[in-house]
Image 1 (tube, one colour):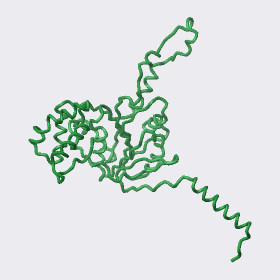
Image 2 (cartoon, helix red, strand yellow):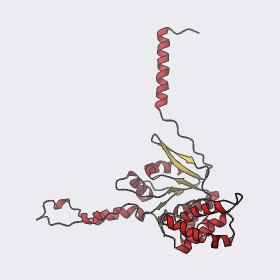
Image 3 (tube, rainbow, N blue to C red):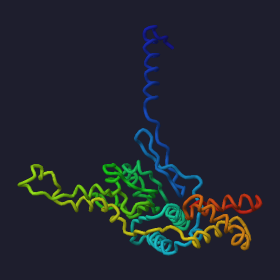
Image 4 (cartoon, rainbow, N blue to C red):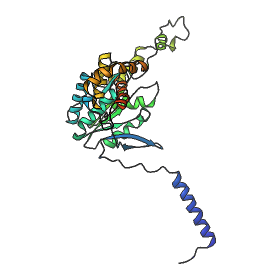
Length: 310
């Protein structure tokens, strides 16, 4: 083999160093999608996104959700239609925190996963990638729900327009195998400020030099605020728990740890109410947290743990 001249060897070595630097600067290839999974998260790195399989999805069931029977029936029926290939609607779940909104979405996934339902959780900051997600799953045979938890927007956020277009407003319609389920503490997803009422003024152009700056149709600004919510065909509200509802949920989760009925009702009642009082809230999440604490002090290690959080 012919030996390289010193000058050529130096050039080759410098080229190899340059190639190594270029390769280090290039973004790593995105991982392949594990389509055998039931749930995914949309991940983004260096502006490129991919579906990351969730290895241990929450195993909550519809029976674990107490006191929200009407909401369960509506979401389960809509999802059943979707999985069966019949027309179904996008779903918006709004209301008090900790009352089971996100748990209901996870529960319908567990109910219908074996029938081809899949869930893709997308963070609000990544909603601008919705068209990429649609392109990725549109040809798949499974049914996909894009899940946006605790959704809300401020004025001008890019994710707002992306969500609005994907729901109803883009030249390319949403594919038949995809729906959007979102939860929010806000009914209209965007803040409505008192100052907007103050800004709505009508002036006389003959007496006010800047009358042309006033909005001619101020009502249209308000319509824009609520237009995104209107694009969800199923719109369900969740309400704060009263005392009896809260105690019933506590009893349910305590039962999942194997506590006997009398222990659930009599022994835990006072502590459950105090637990809620110190947190300033009665909700399913607070009830689940109390049950974990109480059961951890009262039951043996062999008792079956609660399956998931609210």
